[in-house]
Image (tube, rainbow, N blue to C red; front, side, top):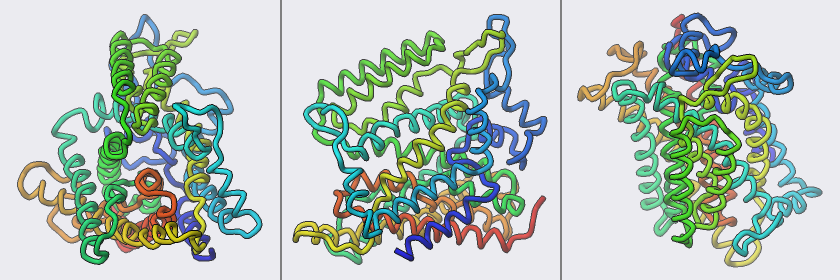
Length: 478
């Protein structure tokens, strides 16, 4: 228990300073990609302000209304947004993780805390009552994935993924960062654990961009400005890969009628989005219907958030009574992101890090599964700490050497420091945490989740410290 507390305290020390928020807000991330400038905190510069306006809307005027960065937020939401930009989202997530681990391993609270998350809640859906943890993982997380989907949509339309030239290297790096960790996992489990489980093969493919950028933010003056845009774009593609895995690899008992219904709802939402509608309530209703169909179809239901987000047009505008307009996608992100950061993600951490450490499994079958979890745990750790850096670094270097894509500015010179910059980005890719925990939750049965989840936390800590140590020895660049 002391070891687990030390892990979280160490991570908290990295996340509590002046860091980027958990889920970097779109209005902050996209200007970085567009301008490539180093201004990561404080008021945006002129170049960033211009890029904000470019991302926020594709047409300068809408029905005579004036288009701005965003319509002012309500006071309480503005306070949350400022707290998010100050880096408190990462601290909230870490505190929730530490609290859950403590409660799950304290004699007086462990039994009740663990039962809480397994307790059925609400009406049965399709004859199956969802537990509180399942409502968070498949219900509330759909909102989180809705935000992720909106960020991806704008990146692909007007951001860093809008052209093949800009997207080539991050896509190749992300592909290497997904495939090589899985290959390392396979090798470790096959060689070191004869007959070990491959169920968690996809877990080390994921990166938690919030914590990766948090560590990066501490040493950003020692890295070329283009490295932040490269890491953010790479992680966007990485998120898309993890979402595709959730949607396809972990489906069970698929119901074709409900799958067809989900396809029909998605087609209807897409047609509605092409009209340029700015009615978020209609998209929410369609998203809820899609969520229900996917849940009944046996597909991970939180994918409904991504599909609904992809159906919203980047040209759709919301016009306030004052006549000021803003892009609907931007409006949704800046209003939902703080709620996700300080509400949904801490709840996710509370539910999914309630792991009893060192508690003996009850029953022969459970004990056997707990023992079998050592192979996935070793594969996940090796995949994150070895596979991620090697995959990102190797794929980027090969793409550059064969002329498929060019390395970002400041990372393309042929000397040791430039190779170090690329290697550090690879190390930051090994910070798994949130997405790895979610993949672990869906990939493994309950008795096998404890040790792999602990390894995810340990590997994220080691990757963070390794990247921080490498950046610390570099000389400031600006």
